[in-house]
Length: 91
Image 1 (cartoon, rainbow, N blue to C red):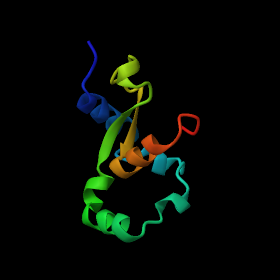
Image 2: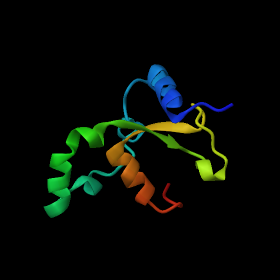
Image 3: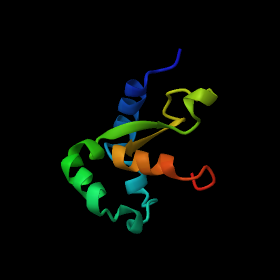
Image 4: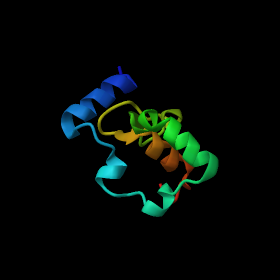
């Protein structure tokens, strides 16, 4: 039986601390964090929500990926959205 995303997320937080892996490893270029117009307005309005940690499946659930610490990463909502917009090659 696999764990829920919440259980896997809590386990990753216990192991590594409550920090986004992309931020911890400096994987996102600063140039991708420049927001203007409606993006900037959205970022300001939803800042706390976008910093909330989420569980990211390395092997996608639709491809059989389970919610485990080995198959997961903690990502802020902002970085999770950014990561999912990247090409599969860049991911």
